Length: 332
Image (tube, rainbow, N blue to C red; front, side):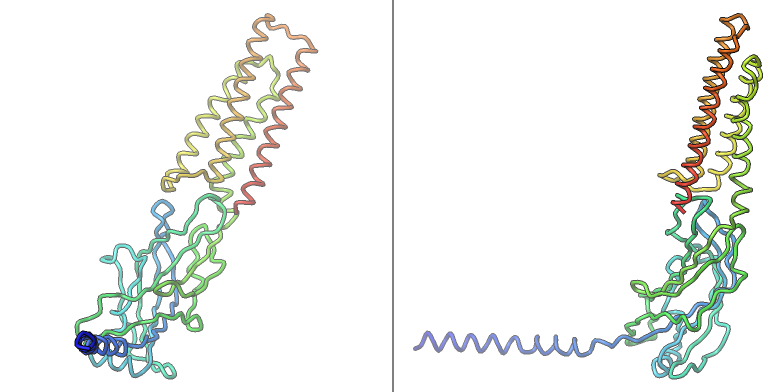
């Protein structure tokens, strides 16, 4: 009996020691603040200075933050501006950006809000250049809660950012050089709100700037076999010039892009153009050597054979370009 009594006393003592800890945990759970909804609206007025090489762009517009009236009054009474509770996550060069209030508190139904004018440079990691210079161009504006709350708030709120698409908009002036805005949406993202801007390239602009020079150069190359085989020196002079032209044109367009671990649509067109030019150059060398061995006298049968070979190469080149165009269409 004595052993049982001592065991029961030890058990009761342990339970009594655990009660304060359990009550403290319960109080901590009960004291956890409820999530405060902070509604975010974005009105984008201008998108400019897009850099494909840096994947950055400038954006200007209005940020509207609204919260329940009681909570907003508590923040304002503590001297806390609501914009201090959030930040643009993909903002680069914050020292060169601007976010300032352009209105006082606004009554928005049961909420109180405030408008802020913003202007800065942003980064978009979703840009994919595989279909360049065609395909869509996605840009984002990401607003998240700032974990560093002002010290004037004794009990920092647990913010829950919610998108407010009804009060959001994108103006027509947001079109960029070479790109036209096709769609936008304001959606919730993990830890915040994201405005997605989808741009499509202006087809004629991209064609004239990048594809038309390449097309003209390769048309000249594909027409060169129409010169008679007896014009050996003239035929041999054209492929090196075409190769140098392709190198300079490709380098000019690649300088506008970042270093990529994959090929773009335009890279595929240039690679195939190099191959076509090299094949014709080799064929011209073979024809020139053949004519030289025959002393410049090529029979009619030999000329027709060469013409059929070169026609086959021309048709194969056109078929290859057709397949590349179909592939490019699928990429976009």
